[in-house]
Image 1 (cartoon, rainbow, N blue to C red):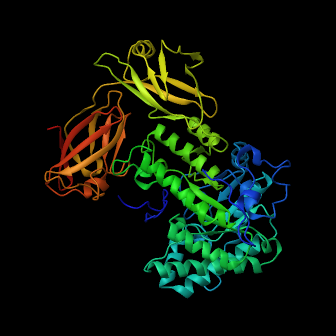
Image 2 (tube, rainbow, N blue to C red):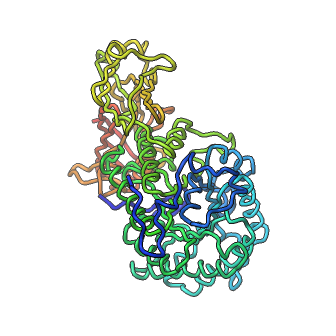
Image 3 (spheres, rainbow, N blue to C red):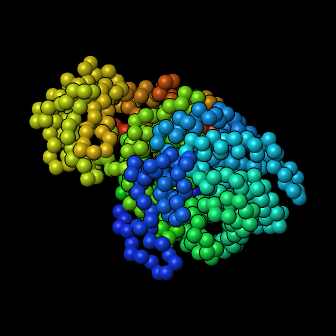
Length: 583
């Protein structure tokens, strides 16, 4: 299995990517348990955040920033604010996001296309004014605000190994101008040196040295610029913002060397990579995915928090969710966000949700998936129960039988099973034995009605605290695929899904070798190699997948569906044409 890779987003280059308060540390090091404060509702200041002073202790200030939200794919878009599909940012948007309960906002900013030539690298005054306008709206709303140097990291800073002096001069000029422009902003404004810093043509030792040089230069420039910058909170990243232990150790060394109590470590977390994008058959938030999450957050605590260095997870989410719907099954996604919220609270880490428009509709000012947001919001303050699945599949062509789900209670107590506002009757409609919830066949028969394909009803399992767990009751039959010949650029397999939902796809040649762009596993990446189109009754094989397939070599595709059924299909590419058959 490949290592977890660094976070990526739409329009971004792709590359590798329960705690108890500790005793007081050695002299000069703050014990996080004594100053970090509490997360969630208990962390609300008595006055509005716009007027309340920022705590002297960086750890307490970072606690007050929880939870956070990213204004992604806006001011970081290349070359201009609306080029990546998001509307021009308005004060109404920021007001609306603040009303959702977020206490901090990260405003990624890409400066490259708004700068003049060397040696001054002058930032366009109109662009600086626009960034300041958005920052001031956010500050007025009571947000803690983070701004950075964002996609500049791969546009020009990545060349530092071979163009050292040029890159350093541009970095210094950029931050000198930003620091000067924002020197009199309130202390709620936080500077982040560079987003996901990466360095081409360099080994690990060289990369560590280059990042240390950038972070140190950033610190020196900002502190020397005077005004509020003398004590402003500053965020320093690991290489590519990856929470790898070696990289976190390097950053901890840099932060300690600067001897500045108002520094913050920042990393990003997008989950165990195969689960995050749905590749290599990692369709579930299973033990491997959960272990990766728990180990990573514990590493943040042990490396930074326990040493008196606060941590902001400047971006978190799931990469597959950013790339389109369906890549990560919704129930598995709910489990992931529930566990991440718990890990953040347990390890005293502040989290900032990466949103490039996938979560919050910036035109309609509402959540695209309100239930998902309820789960995320609940995780800021408490645990919620989940279950082995959020779906119960009933084959239309067979008699309905009892169906059992395993509950993950997470410290809660089961209270009821409901359909809408109607409580189902224990013993008659369902039974609960330990953590095994069994839906009785008679109740299922009643609930599904005429058994049309698809979701017939959705139940809610409620618990002593946290959000209810949804259970979709779905009628299905094995999907039926049909043969077709079409061009590689528009190849779609006619598919009667018949109520079922696609989980993943395997691709192999006749000799069992893996076929497709992801050559290290037969299971190809959802939405990158293949994607279902339920409305058009088709499964699309992407040009990226077909281009990687050998000419005139028959490929066996095995489609795995969430009901547990599979369908086999064969494709053969010849030049720009693909023929698909069921046998």
